[in-house]
Image (tube, rainbow, N blue to C red):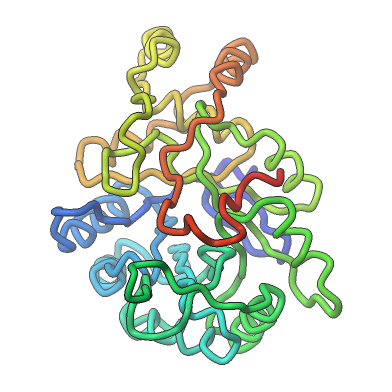
Length: 322
């Protein structure tokens, strides 16, 4: 790890900051909050901003980034920005145009990382979640390797510096890695990961392939519509509470520090200025090997984000093969 800049190397020679701001806006929260949070985060020291076409906030996030460039806080090359290919754009001839749409909203010349958001293609069209008359999701048959080849072309065109995947299991990753004529390996795999779902097998697999694992949902979840409401509240866990007391930190910081010490890149979403600034304290302390073992033992394979709208696809649940 490059401690000076708190970043790790990707397998294509670029570097990714280990702490990132997630910009998915919950229901009933104005999209303008993404603009405010991104500005606050950059001012607080965040240099990694994670977003996606489907979040529908790239205009706001792009405006925030450009405003902090304009006032001299950062240069463009200081910011690591991630966007994602939505599932309705998996057909190879749609991939580059999708990224170009994001760049137009952002008003940026390139993104630093472009991810395939999910391994399950949906029918292209104007609807993000296309459904038939019975309300069933309309899936599409597209070879992931064909989509990946189109993403490689986006990298070659200079529209993105790096390419990777999200919500992939070992089997999906093997499909890409074993693709005949593979030009670029995925640099990362972004998945749900937290003390209740530590993804040990997937982490070990990714490390063996020089693929960085990026954790979303690292603090559990807000109780949004995407989240299983029966799941426990991670940050209320007494073990996290005891370690927080021991280190004089918040349970959230303990959960974030745990991931960094395992070698993950970690994303955190917040629209609270105090919490955004507090999250930067993750670099100010260390967990002991005993602490790490205690946190490892919290794993219970609990998912807060089961992505139920993909239920009905023959590949669902698509995370179980690792």
